[in-house]
Length: 210
Length: 210
Image (cartoon, rainbow over all chains, first blue to last red; front, side, top):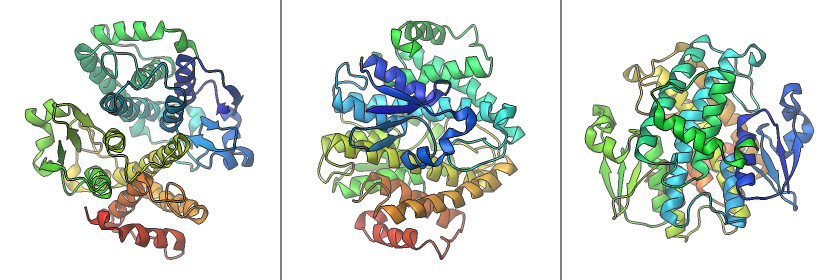
């Protein structure tokens, strides 16, 4: 297997943390997004959507999208489980991971991609160019603040972002929070104690540095 | 089990078609989005994200997000399979379903929600209000056209939206295409023969009327 990824981008980090939690050793290959390598014919043949990461199996099958890579690795390496042990657990982790992807990661990405001058015509990932929209920079920031608030409320009710135990949902939530803090220079509001405690707890896992 | 849903909305339709393909009989309850019933305390207690559908199990567990509802139903009622028989198949269907959700359904929703006067401060689903942005109406339409083009290219290579057999990926792609045609009054370009043939093939399944 080989993971095509890019160290600085949030979605590949979701795959890397998952792989580290599974204690798997998978060869990686950098796709340099700064030079547009995701649009080169060689990579387009692997992933026509021109996004990272992609997991390429030994038979050449190319699996794109983090949700799909996770599903494959969870089934082929069930322990330690990152989705839970029962159909119900797996559904709930999938629910939370999906929520933090749409309301968290995509929110932060909306701000980042409509603010950074270097992403001028790249307001969305994927094979097509879309121009930045100034109003979306503001909306992305508003959504990011709402994400922090929603995550805080959730973490008052449950110890982790996907339930009572660490799961794939924590990976998406952590990557989204870190993306906001690092790229948007945002601070988690001081009164969000549940979110701050959770972040310290999850970030202290060795996988977080993956 | 009970499915909380709303007949006119695209995401509940993804759940209904899946349930019809599985030949399951699940009680449904309408959450009237037109009157804002998704924000009432009774529904908020079931789904704090205030979106439909939600599948509530007999023990009271509430599963939100279509990807999670699908995963639960696929595991508890494996036949007929809508994700495939192997870990690899399931990963590929998950990949395509995710792509058509992000690049298809969210693209059409961006156009619809930034155009329809009745959705003025509801440019995104979820618990928070965001105002419409005129430039997003245009971008949503551009993304929808790109979605049609990408789906056409994909369907030139494979018979279905998720591979060689009918799968959950077709459900998301069909719901997104129908949403565009019905709500945005768009036509599928005449030269997109693979897309037109696929739509006729998938829409002719009894489940499509669910």
